Length: 116
Length: 113
Figure 1 (cartoon, each protein chain N blue to C red):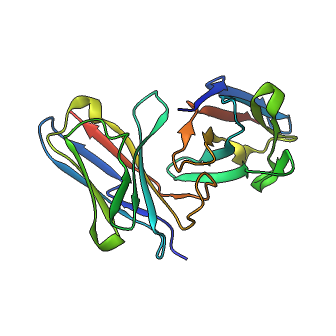
Figure 2 (cartoon, rainbow over the protein chains, first blue to last red; figure 1 turned 90 degrees about the horizontal axis):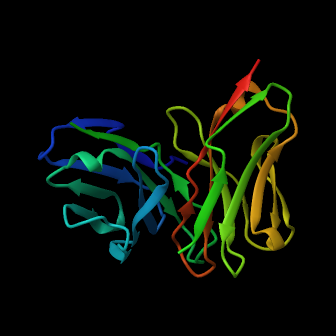
């Protein structure tokens, strides 16, 4: 089966611009997650979708970040306007199970975002 | 929220030597525990996980980890390092009733010929 696909793999934008990251989960996976790793820090949870609904967005840093999941399929994460501190690697993951905590995520390769 | 500590941001081992990566978590209730690996230019790949049952967990590529509740630890080992083990390794935990993963800072492993 195809894995979790993210694109672009790299993006370099200027401060103040807008960037949209996309994630295509594994087909049939209801759960979709976004994580972020800022340089030198831990990978941090951003939010969790169940189908098209936001289940938990407690990790979203501020209102410059907007995540959507169209029809419960692919998801986009928009940063507008981008700031220098938004630079990092953005990971998407998906899972099928409804059992909490059991993991079983499949991660994508990530999008490396550089804001200059 | 869970806290995960990985001791050592960089580990260098000789090919054929033991690989030991340390992970401690903070929780009064045993969580679910994971080790992920990220090879260069790739995504995070699950090495192994502990949910319930046997405390010694075997994963892919010859890795294993042991859950020690009394020490709140979940250290990762491999008896004999191979050049292909060069990567960054992440310990992660989740509560039994939560989807979110909390990650450690990661340990980069280099393997010397």
